[in-house]
Image (cartoon, rainbow, N blue to C red; front, side, top):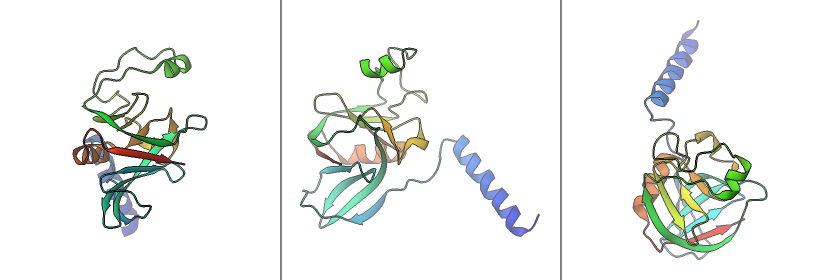
Length: 171
């Protein structure tokens, strides 16, 4: 095995150790220019891009990769953060339970919880911006309408926003 092979093996081992330790891959959030006339403090989700933007003002935003609603579960509109939850308990909605009847009625906080470590419940309580126990779903159309984020990203965003934060979902 040449030097490159040893490096690739060492890098793979380091990634495996980070994953086992719960560190996973680094966040893909980034500071980007933004336009569109949104006020600072607004969350904008662009489902066609599978990106969430937290508008900072002065033409800048933090952009996060997200998972969005699967075909037939997409939605668009304006709402706001109605409630914030740390280590939420998940109660699968009836629609999800119909599709997956083996699901428990409640999933406590922890690694099996699909909401991850934080949830920002949107007005009317049907959808949330939350973490995930399925990192591989980020960047896809995978949910029943919720916006999924990497756990480290949802924790970071959770600290930036308050109840009442405007949320705009665009296709």
